[in-house]
Image (cartoon, rainbow, N blue to C red; front, side, top):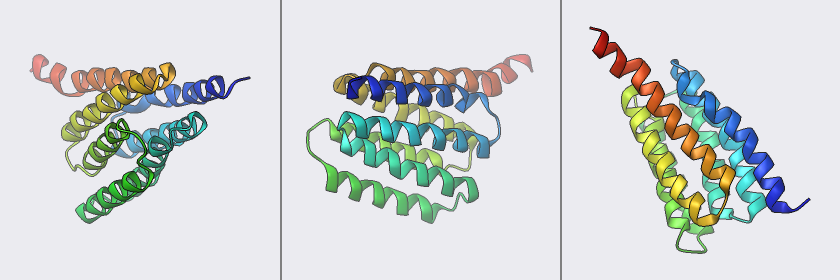
Length: 167
């Protein structure tokens, strides 16, 4: 079995976790689902040899777990610095900048106190990472990000737009 196929199988596990992300209402469950998904995606990128994306996503696993406990802004700044440092250290090709940008957006989203803002910024992060995945050529990785984006749009509609329409 090729490493590419192995990476896509690992990403399929992340896809299953991605389906859950924004269908959940409670913040702790949302970030826990993201931590599970990110663990698998980090491994997926590592197998592909995309070390910057792997490292950025590995940092996000820790970030999600920390954010399940606290939303203190000091941690947002700490993870912004860690993400930039990891990105700088692992940078190899121009499209690594896209993964770094997605990681930075993810940091900002994760430490939002407002669920609406968390969802919107996280959807921006998913869109940015989808661009990276398309460039890298990982179809299941791309499917994960597009699924998270779609799930985010559906969840946003369910919890915010539809409620306003019903009032």
